[in-house]
Image (cartoon, rainbow, N blue to C red; front, side, top):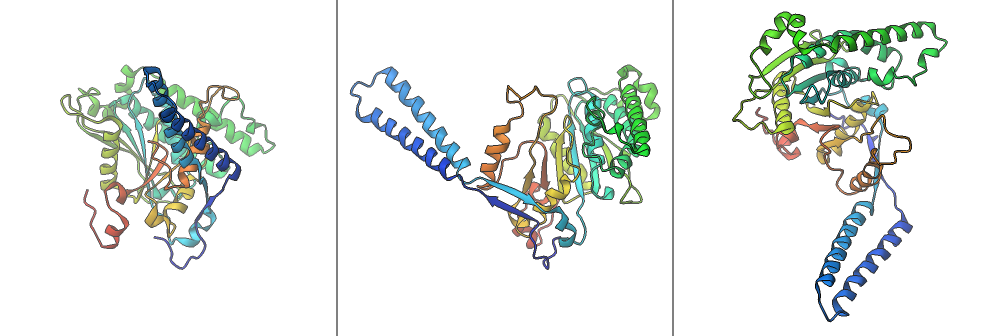
Amino acid sequence: MANPKSVLPLYEKNWYKHTYKRVLDSIILILLLLLLGYRLVSVNNYSLPWFVAFMCECWFTLGWIFTMSTQWNPALVKTYPQRLLQSVEELPAVDIFVTTADEELEPPIITVNTVLSLLSLDYPSHKLSCYVSDDACSPLIFYALQQASNFAKHWVPFCKKYNVQIRAPFRYFNDDNDECTTNNEEFRQEWLQMKDMYENLSREIDVDPKSIPSLLEREFAIFSNTNRTNHPAIIKVILENKEMVENGLPHLIYISREKRPKQPHHFKAGAMNVLTRVSGLITNAPFMLNVDCDMFVNNPKIVQHAMCILLDSRGEKEVAFVQCPQQFYATLKDDPFGNQMTILYKYLMAGLAGLQGPFYGGTNCFHRRKVMYGLSSDDVENGTQILI
């Protein structure tokens, strides 16, 4: 809960105005309206080409109005994570959801890197719980997570000790990384050791799926006689911080929801529903973060930044979720095909932030659990119970 005695805001929304852009956009809108008026009053013969042209111009004018509305009053949100501990007595728990659906299209090594970047966040470990939803019911994904949990016991302390910024190993140990050339001999030795351990992990995960039963032994029994469209629910706790040690490892739970051939499963939305219900019974954190399995965290303090908005006195009543932008790696130089979607995140998101806020992008988003259960701030103040 936020501390009412704190007077410093945890975040600020700064609006910036482009006067010349507003004038130019308004002139273009006026010209478009004049063109539509000209079409209506100056043409006597309403032929088919005229009608097609008129409809196209109406559609363009409508699109221009929507574009103006999203860019008329853009805003940027600035957070102050250094004030967070001064404003709250204790940081809240966060449940993290990772969804994967196909071990061939989404190789296990990608999911493993996503999970490792989440387990090593700069946030109290006993406040984090990572749930991995496997819609393919693949023993290979479960095996990969088991091996990654062993690697995480070395990777997480290494990242926090040396304040590593990019905590997905496959990006950190890329060919362009020159951190191992530092004069710090201790760091260099540990860096080389971690790289060797990650390469071993990659080789262990890259196995023939038919060999998984002999590798998992007893753990594989639950995957017998199952396929991706017909199997019971499977929940396995891979890592558990039993002592609730702050500097330990977060919880890591594997989930494969029940599927039957004649029952609709609603794809990712169904997986998110199951993750919400299962996490509500196990950890029941007040906030949830969902990411896709092919993404990683490039800012280890992202949870603190999100909490600044969600825990602020204004945000507690006005903000239901915090949508984080995304960037794409391994793109072409200068991004000639626009794969980074710069326009979407730099202009559209900023413009929507000046209105009521950006839309939910389907991933990289922090949610309030009570909002996901359909409760408003008034319901919580009135003491409405949350039933799972």
